[in-house]
Image (cartoon, rainbow, N blue to C red; front, side, top):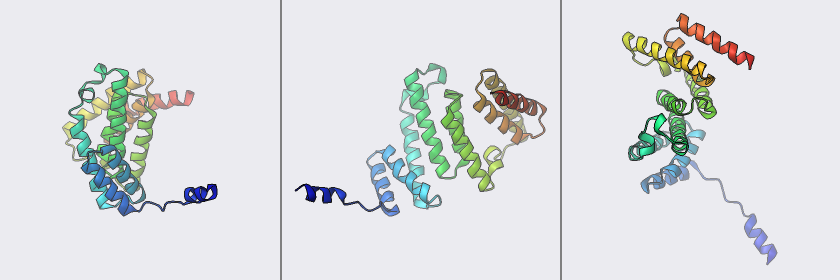
Length: 211
């Protein structure tokens, strides 16, 4: 009896195919289980980034999450209004959103999701790693600049430069170096010769070098 049981337990299930993962994602999404749908669609895109059905499913997951988010009071508050539990939930949501957009090669939206995390938790390491991954993938596809500059008029560029300058200065003073570096890098992409941006970058590098 023990030998038979051991054999039964020893039987290995075959790997789940891409088609099976897509079907499971579709079924989970249909039943309203967005988290499970994200898992299966994410696995497909990790293995096959250009799989169109996987990309479409991930887009549907994010759309469903966005609609759900609008009905959750905790995620519609400003950061200062959130308690620690609400903030943790919001950070988790934006990180998952950013990873989903990254898997679909929608770099601008992935970066915006990472920025939302920094607003909630300026020193978040997962968000920093997400930004690095976004930049790496965008660079590999020759889209690094378009992640930051996408059909912007000069007036809007000037506004963004000032905003990034303020964000970088505030983050640097608060010792939130990952957030400061992101703001400085975006500023310098928009205006590589910007003196304030170069000064902030130099100050940031000095601080990081001393750590």
